[in-house]
Image 1 (cartoon, rainbow, N blue to C red):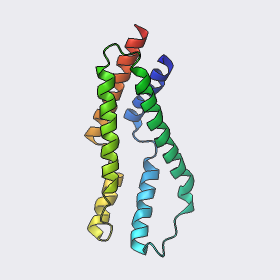
Image 2 (image 1 turned 180 degrees about the vertical axis):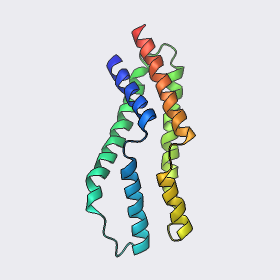
Image 3 (image 1 turned 30 degrees about the vertical axis):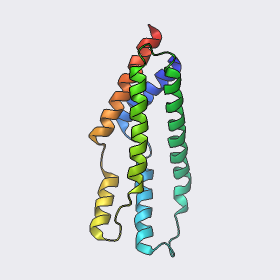
Image 4 (image 1 turned 120 degrees about the vertical axis):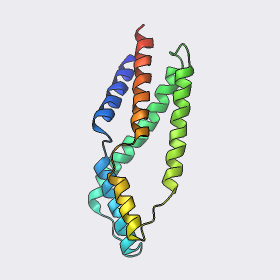
Length: 150
Protein backbone atom coordinates (compact mmCIF):
# COMPACT_ATOMS: atom_id res chain seq x y z
CA UNK A 1 0.00 0.00 0.00
CA UNK A 2 2.93 2.34 0.67
CA UNK A 3 4.27 1.69 -2.83
CA UNK A 4 0.94 2.60 -4.47
CA UNK A 5 0.63 5.68 -2.28
CA UNK A 6 4.05 6.91 -3.38
CA UNK A 7 3.23 6.20 -7.04
CA UNK A 8 -0.08 8.07 -6.85
CA UNK A 9 1.57 10.95 -5.00
CA UNK A 10 4.16 11.23 -7.78
CA UNK A 11 1.41 11.14 -10.43
CA UNK A 12 -0.46 13.98 -8.72
CA UNK A 13 2.72 16.06 -8.39
CA UNK A 14 3.37 15.46 -12.10
CA UNK A 15 -0.17 16.61 -12.93
CA UNK A 16 0.31 19.71 -10.80
CA UNK A 17 3.59 20.54 -12.52
CA UNK A 18 2.80 19.69 -16.15
CA UNK A 19 -0.99 19.61 -16.50
CA UNK A 20 -3.06 17.05 -18.38
CA UNK A 21 -1.00 14.45 -20.22
CA UNK A 22 -3.37 14.20 -23.22
CA UNK A 23 -4.09 17.91 -23.70
CA UNK A 24 -3.11 17.94 -27.40
CA UNK A 25 -5.24 14.86 -28.08
CA UNK A 26 -8.23 16.61 -26.49
CA UNK A 27 -7.60 19.68 -28.68
CA UNK A 28 -7.32 17.51 -31.80
CA UNK A 29 -10.56 15.69 -30.95
CA UNK A 30 -12.27 19.06 -30.45
CA UNK A 31 -11.04 20.23 -33.85
CA UNK A 32 -12.44 17.04 -35.37
CA UNK A 33 -15.81 17.84 -33.76
CA UNK A 34 -15.71 21.30 -35.34
CA UNK A 35 -14.83 19.77 -38.71
CA UNK A 36 -17.68 17.29 -38.38
CA UNK A 37 -20.14 20.09 -37.59
CA UNK A 38 -18.96 22.17 -40.55
CA UNK A 39 -18.93 19.34 -43.11
CA UNK A 40 -22.01 17.58 -41.81
CA UNK A 41 -22.33 14.14 -40.28
CA UNK A 42 -23.12 12.49 -43.63
CA UNK A 43 -20.01 13.77 -45.45
CA UNK A 44 -17.62 13.57 -42.51
CA UNK A 45 -14.60 11.25 -42.64
CA UNK A 46 -12.77 10.90 -39.32
CA UNK A 47 -9.02 11.34 -39.15
CA UNK A 48 -7.13 8.08 -38.81
CA UNK A 49 -4.25 9.86 -37.05
CA UNK A 50 -6.33 10.27 -33.88
CA UNK A 51 -7.04 6.56 -33.39
CA UNK A 52 -4.03 5.60 -31.31
CA UNK A 53 -3.91 8.77 -29.15
CA UNK A 54 -7.66 8.45 -28.50
CA UNK A 55 -7.22 4.85 -27.46
CA UNK A 56 -4.40 5.90 -25.09
CA UNK A 57 -6.65 8.61 -23.64
CA UNK A 58 -9.52 6.17 -23.06
CA UNK A 59 -7.27 3.51 -21.51
CA UNK A 60 -5.66 6.07 -19.22
CA UNK A 61 -9.03 7.44 -18.08
CA UNK A 62 -10.54 4.01 -17.41
CA UNK A 63 -7.46 2.65 -15.63
CA UNK A 64 -7.23 5.80 -13.49
CA UNK A 65 -10.90 5.49 -12.56
CA UNK A 66 -10.55 1.82 -11.59
CA UNK A 67 -7.25 2.32 -9.75
CA UNK A 68 -8.48 5.33 -7.77
CA UNK A 69 -11.66 3.55 -6.68
CA UNK A 70 -9.69 0.43 -5.79
CA UNK A 71 -7.14 2.48 -3.83
CA UNK A 72 -9.84 4.34 -1.91
CA UNK A 73 -11.66 1.12 -1.06
CA UNK A 74 -8.44 -0.46 0.23
CA UNK A 75 -7.54 2.71 2.12
CA UNK A 76 -10.58 2.27 4.38
CA UNK A 77 -8.80 -0.64 6.05
CA UNK A 78 -5.69 1.43 6.79
CA UNK A 79 -7.20 4.83 7.62
CA UNK A 80 -7.78 5.11 11.38
CA UNK A 81 -10.16 8.06 11.05
CA UNK A 82 -11.97 6.98 7.85
CA UNK A 83 -13.32 10.52 7.37
CA UNK A 84 -10.59 11.67 4.96
CA UNK A 85 -11.04 8.58 2.79
CA UNK A 86 -14.81 8.79 2.90
CA UNK A 87 -14.84 12.50 2.05
CA UNK A 88 -12.39 11.98 -0.82
CA UNK A 89 -14.47 9.10 -2.14
CA UNK A 90 -17.55 11.33 -2.05
CA UNK A 91 -15.66 14.11 -3.81
CA UNK A 92 -14.47 11.63 -6.43
CA UNK A 93 -17.97 10.32 -7.10
CA UNK A 94 -19.34 13.87 -7.32
CA UNK A 95 -16.62 14.84 -9.79
CA UNK A 96 -17.47 11.82 -11.96
CA UNK A 97 -21.15 12.78 -11.91
CA UNK A 98 -20.29 16.39 -12.77
CA UNK A 99 -18.07 15.24 -15.66
CA UNK A 100 -20.85 13.05 -17.06
CA UNK A 101 -23.37 15.90 -16.84
CA UNK A 102 -20.88 18.34 -18.37
CA UNK A 103 -20.18 15.85 -21.18
CA UNK A 104 -23.88 15.64 -22.04
CA UNK A 105 -24.03 19.38 -22.79
CA UNK A 106 -23.06 19.78 -26.42
CA UNK A 107 -21.40 23.02 -27.55
CA UNK A 108 -22.99 25.15 -30.27
CA UNK A 109 -20.79 24.51 -33.29
CA UNK A 110 -23.18 25.97 -35.87
CA UNK A 111 -22.14 29.60 -35.37
CA UNK A 112 -18.73 31.23 -35.56
CA UNK A 113 -19.02 32.58 -32.02
CA UNK A 114 -19.88 29.11 -30.71
CA UNK A 115 -16.87 27.63 -32.50
CA UNK A 116 -14.64 30.39 -31.12
CA UNK A 117 -15.87 29.77 -27.55
CA UNK A 118 -15.35 26.03 -27.99
CA UNK A 119 -11.77 26.50 -29.26
CA UNK A 120 -10.96 28.87 -26.40
CA UNK A 121 -12.30 26.34 -23.91
CA UNK A 122 -10.21 23.58 -25.49
CA UNK A 123 -7.01 25.60 -25.43
CA UNK A 124 -7.53 27.20 -22.03
CA UNK A 125 -5.17 26.46 -19.18
CA UNK A 126 -5.97 24.79 -15.92
CA UNK A 127 -8.83 26.03 -13.81
CA UNK A 128 -8.81 26.84 -10.11
CA UNK A 129 -11.00 23.81 -9.41
CA UNK A 130 -8.62 21.41 -11.17
CA UNK A 131 -5.62 22.79 -9.27
CA UNK A 132 -7.55 22.64 -5.97
CA UNK A 133 -8.56 19.05 -6.73
CA UNK A 134 -4.95 18.05 -7.39
CA UNK A 135 -3.86 19.73 -4.15
CA UNK A 136 -6.55 17.85 -2.22
CA UNK A 137 -5.36 14.55 -3.69
CA UNK A 138 -1.74 15.41 -2.83
CA UNK A 139 -2.73 16.24 0.75
CA UNK A 140 -4.65 12.97 0.99
CA UNK A 141 -1.74 10.89 -0.29
CA UNK A 142 0.66 12.62 2.10
CA UNK A 143 -1.78 11.89 4.92
CA UNK A 144 -2.07 8.24 3.88
CA UNK A 145 1.71 7.95 3.58
CA UNK A 146 2.03 9.31 7.11
CA UNK A 147 -0.61 6.89 8.39
CA UNK A 148 1.00 3.92 6.67
CA UNK A 149 4.53 4.72 7.83
CA UNK A 150 3.71 5.70 11.41
